[in-house]
Amino acid sequence: MGFLLNFIEHEWHKEVLMGSVKQSGDNIVSVILIFSLLLCSSMAQSQNSSNTHDPELLQALFHSYANETLSRHHTGNLYNITLPSNFTTVQVSVVRLRSGRFWSVGANFSYFQIPKRVIPRPYAKRIAIVFDNLGNLSSYYYKVPNHSLVAPVVGFNGYDASNLSALNDEKLTFSVTDNPILISFPQISLEGHKNVTPKCVKFGDGGSVEFINMTQPNVCVTQGAGHFSVVVPSPPTPPKKKEEKQHWKRWVVGFVGGFLGLILLIVVGMIVFMVLRRKKIKEMENESEKGVAFDTFWIGRSRMPSATMMRTQPALEDDYDA
Ligand SMILES: *[C@@H]1O[C@H](CO)[C@@H](O)[C@H](O)[C@H]1NC(C)=O
Ligand SMILES: *[C@@H]1O[C@H](CO)[C@@H](O)[C@H](O)[C@H]1NC(C)=O
Ligand SMILES: *[C@@H]1O[C@H](CO)[C@@H](O)[C@H](O)[C@H]1NC(C)=O
Ligand SMILES: *[C@@H]1O[C@H](CO)[C@@H](O)[C@H](O)[C@H]1NC(C)=O
Ligand SMILES: *[C@@H]1O[C@H](CO)[C@@H](O)[C@H](O)[C@H]1NC(C)=O
Image (cartoon, rainbow, N blue to C red; front, side, top):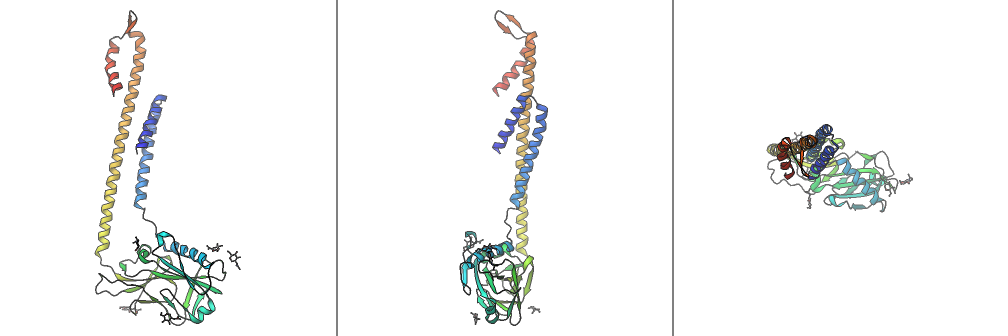
């Protein structure tokens, strides 16, 4: 802000020195406009600053780490993946399996029991399954309207891993022909939720949410890949309260923004006033310079101002003191 004001003042002085004051009047309008735009856009940015937590991007990140991990490891074992430090509470692991074995035995890894006779499509000689548990980041990535998550979001995706050195990035779909896939949740915390029936939810691609009844405690069933959690209906009051709080915040931001704008206007107004005053004084100075030729007379070696000169002088002195 200080820098900008200095800049404006500097520009003004330049304009005045060049004597193009009419033009600089236009310039000050554009400076005000530009500054207001900057202020507005910075405010809008601070309102939207919450990161976009896109689950698809997260899965793409897991895929690229899985690709890197698998290129160094054997088929048949589950490997934990080390993620960047902002995801340390997220657990991701990956296993590569021959699809013949996957069909005849199934896969029992992480929180998932995939029974035998599950068919991955399209056909691949080997498949890789990436498992994840989003831990305390779950609610940033997955939300269910009017419900609260009471378990972390866990999920899995399958990819074609026929090429041992490069994991295909298209997701496989799974068809269950016999028993469903079981998901055993690591923890479900029903603290503060009395007399409610927890429900399983499945998060599909594109933000779809599907409710599934929970038939065994802490266990959900699914017919395919995706992300899963457990929810309870949320009491209607907390969301409203949050909204009010946000309204309140918006008011504060608006008020502070308006106040800053007002201060800016006052400062700019003062600069305009100062510059105009200086310009006027300069004109008066020029006038009196011209006047000197006619209105002064000489006494000995010194020049004496005439009556007209006397009247303008106090204003000049005031200005040089200011
Ligand atoms: C998978 O794990 C469950 C529980 O740990 C066990 O009961 C089941 O036999 C396992 N199945 C296979 C195929 O390993
Ligand atoms: C998640 O938990 C970890 C450790 O328990 C903590 O450092 C981190 O701040 C938590 N993150 C969020 C978003 O709550
Ligand atoms: C496997 O992937 C690597 C790396 O992308 C590529 O160079 C190679 O040609 C692929 N092999 C086959 C058989 O597609
Ligand atoms: C997977 O890793 C290999 C090298 O190990 C690399 O050539 C390839 O581009 C990676 N693929 C993706 C989708 O990141
Ligand atoms: C799920 O449970 C509700 C109530 O507990 C019941 O009305 C509904 O029919 C069940 N749905 C299925 C698909 O079992």
